[in-house]
Length: 280
Ligand code: C2E
Ligand code: MG
Ligand code: MG
Ligand code: MG
Image 1 (cartoon, helix red, strand yellow):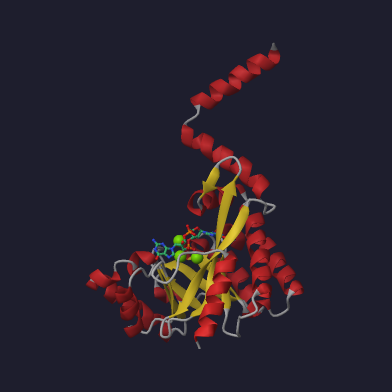
Image 2: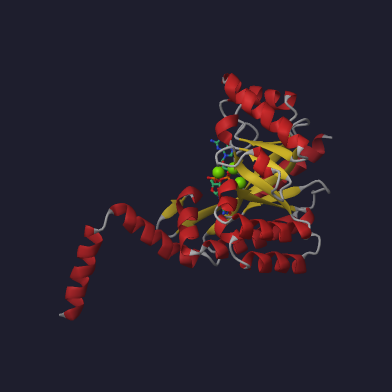
């Protein structure tokens, strides 16, 4: 009798709850179980040398295929993972998997780098320091191969706390990149005080490049200023050849975008490196 009424309550509650809230709860519930890595994988999106067109590394992008929910995109589950704190476990899985990928690449040279995305929550906790200490224990020169991408908003939440952890990471040799640059509120003048090595121009400015004189000006001046601050510049969202040529003229360093490649499986990425090596 009791079980029955509880069931009725649950079912009432579930129907009374709006659909989106229910989906979020289910995602959190399922993601908790996915954190051990079973349903997760990393895809790699090639990073391209702007001048030569050659692959010089990749960005690791998280994918989750849930038994229950099917494919769920990072734009949906990452924000929920951040709110719930699960992101710290996800970040650990991503970084440890990235290390394994780096170790398994036979064709990488000294210039090769793999970028991983850190979230604001990661920068607000000392867990991140333990994680990168652990990675160094596993491979003492891992800092030469990893680039840590953080967004402007990750720093804005609590600049002092974020900057001190970024400094800690930099002291250990890791490179830091500002992701989605131009969509936050910080100016390049503020950037100057951040312990970063690289700036990634958001695809909002890069996608329309070929047809927008205004975006061309924004990108050109961003590249110039970044270079004056000794920052390397990556353009994300390069979708056509004319954007590539414009970025080349403007002296951009590294490109990412569907024109070169979508995010691909690790095996496919390795094949790509091999094919390029055989071209010479
Ligand atoms: P992001 O770090 O800015 O990653 C770039 C996103 O742009 C990726 O989407 C990529 O597939 C997409 N992209 C790349 N080139 C092009 C292009 O030419 N055109 C278009 N339209 N899109 C392009 P994805 O993989 O869906 O990831 C979305 C966001 O989710 C990422 O943005 C990042 O903020 C977050 N994310 C993904 N993986 C992780 C992760 O492991 N940890 C954390 N904290 N966040 C992650
Ligand atoms: Mg990124
Ligand atoms: Mg980005
Ligand atoms: Mg983004």
